[in-house]
Length: 113
Image (cartoon, rainbow, N blue to C red):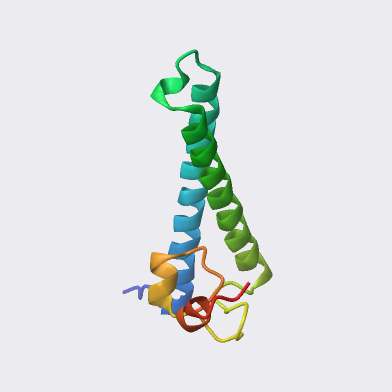
């Protein structure tokens, strides 16, 4: 009789892995969206978008890419999930909703930055 090895990953580690996957998927999604918007901007009819709309949407996509890349970098550095302001852990529920967030709810409401 063989005994299956006990899984040693903690719930926190499993959650972190899931959040990492979510961030990677968001990064790819926003990168693809930005590429699409750039292509639309080069088309004669701009894909049905006004130049202003394309600029606004492209800026939002670029910001999302930067925010997601920064979150992935914080994961690598070991600072992910720690509030940049108060240095307390950011609740897992908040990270699930906003995986790129840098602030806990209390500090975010106070308007740091």
